[in-house]
Length: 119
Image (cartoon, rainbow, N blue to C red; front, side, top):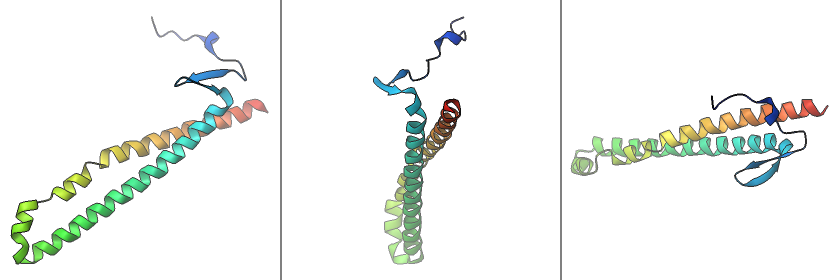
C-alpha cells in the first residue's frame, strides 16, 4: 500500500521542484529535458559514427594483412583485438542514444503541455 496515487501532491502553477538538489522552476523542466535529450542524442550519434569508423579501419587493416602472407604472424599475434575493443562501446553508445531520444520526447511533451496550460 505504499504506492497509492495521491492527487494532493501536485505542485501549484509557478511552484518550484527540487532536481538533484537545485531549485528549478516547474515551467523550465520541459525545455531543460528537451535540451539535454537533444545533446545526448547528438553525442550518441557522433560516438556511434566514430565506433563505425574505428571498426571499418580495423577491418581494412586486417584485410590488408591477411592478403599478404608475409604479415600472417602479426595477425596471429594481435588477432582481432582492435575490433573487440571498438565493439565494447556499442552498448553504452546505444543506451545513450535511447536515453537521449526518451528525454527529447519527454521534454517536448512537457513543453507542449506547459504551453497549452498557459494559454
